[in-house]
Length: 323
Image (cartoon, rainbow, N blue to C red; front, side, top):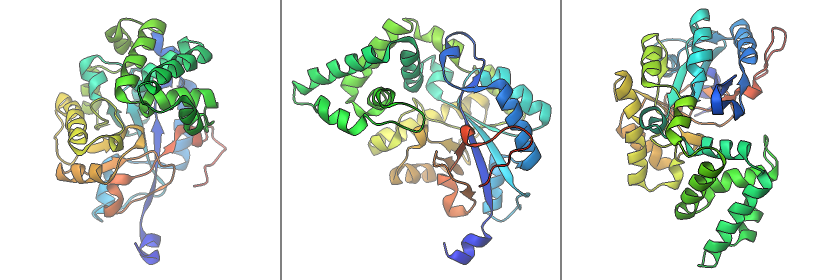
């Protein structure tokens, strides 16, 4: 894109939300945005931005419909129960459009997402003991020719924007860094010992139901796909990516939405060139990442739109976000 074209390209702010609290039951241990803070943030957004639908960005990119001044799109990942109990009533009350991205396995199969299992494990257990369990599993694998504990520590024992190094270490290893045959039994064992042996019961507390999502869709909210099992797509072979994407589209089937011209939200913001090819082949219209920028709304960028995190967006009537 030339500098002149970039200057004339419309922009939009896309905001990413996850848990909104107070959540009920075991979900109350997850980090999230307080419902009061969400209400304040929604007031701020409506005072300084113009909320639009996600697919308004697609129409704007195709030059068929112009965007209003300072457009903003609200998006909600993972399909938490609080999106129905706390978020949707406020959106409907204020006539604010939004897009929701439940994961097929949690919505339809009663499974707890690995990302939430790990959050719940960390909330329920002592992080030092959890690190020890992870290191013990690494040592067993290392004795059989796997990577050493020292190499994992060197790569992943680093603080992040949100977490201290020991928490980042646990999250990264249990999310994706360990080999699947090590990672999967370890996550399930820690979850069963520290959180609950009844995964379906935990899922019922954590996530939206089919009826919730159907009602949200009927009320005019956008429902998109967010993975079959919330896997990082770039870590998968092409055929595995295709299966993860196609499984995600079961959410659209559940609400009666078409499997063409849909929205896809990448789990953990992760994708690669093969992902884009697969989505184009399925006539996906828009894809969302977690890259923290204002989105340039152009046809060649629609499958890799960035989003800012809710924590980057101020609340209250007097603060203005400079983006």
